[in-house]
Image 1 (cartoon, rainbow, N blue to C red):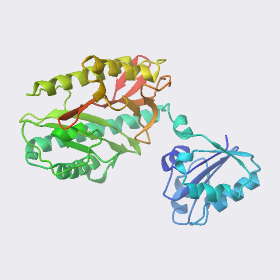
Image 2 (cartoon, helix red, strand yellow):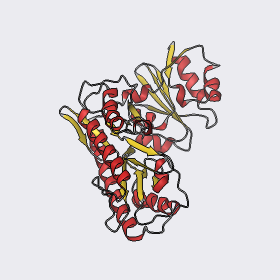
Image 3 (cartoon, rainbow, N blue to C red):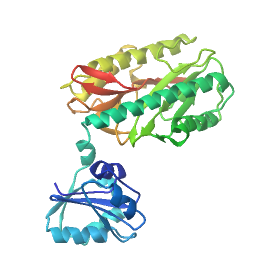
Image 4 (cartoon, helix red, strand yellow):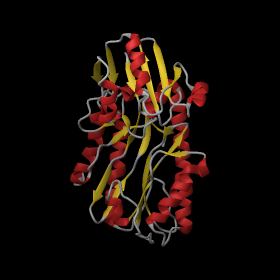
Length: 342
């Protein structure tokens, strides 16, 4: 396949290096990493299985066009999601070539993880779990009266491990009724005894992501363990339902099943409990170099589950202006079922 890439994670997967001004080009048996003079020295020492070429900082596509014309290829696969209209126009208007759209074709190549990738992902999950414990201890000791903005700031510091790790995404820290917003932004709402706390966060280790969510009851014994006891009976009922839904979905993970069957296992539990309309997102998503990869674990997904796929299981119930509960772990598909890594 002849193809062109701009996305940093997609490029990194192909050659072990990426930067913010690059193009990766595969033409037959040859591969090229094209960047500008700011990055060529570093790229030359780190890029694998590709030739590093220096191009015009303001128009790397000039080098691309020269290589394509010289190669004589007739078609080039690209992911339209990676390209702006302007960029693709500048590239394609000067080339007589069959450009073939294939959305997420790089993610499709990465859907089955190698053993090396799995080990990195396990370490990322471990570091993420450690950060959950550290942040939980912080909230237990100093969280009372803290607002979400400050709690979010502290979470970012802890999950970065003082610069040793990156963030998979900006953490979601939500108290009380704000947990009913699946991707809640931090506000000035303060944390008080007896409230619900939702934390969704992850780290990057060697560029690979972790992802986890916990919902907990804030009291003197606060923690982010899965077993939680709430004073409010409705909160307890919702929490127990979400936990049962997650357990059902994890149990449904098997080689050869459709991704939609895993989603259905979680959704059936929530619907039976009467909360179906409040489960407003898919059950999971792939995790790797990107925080959202393939496969998608949704009611519409026809993907057949295979060994060494990695994805989240994260059912949730969100009751507007009241509270929300989400419980999320990342799993690896093994021959015997799901291995929960975090």
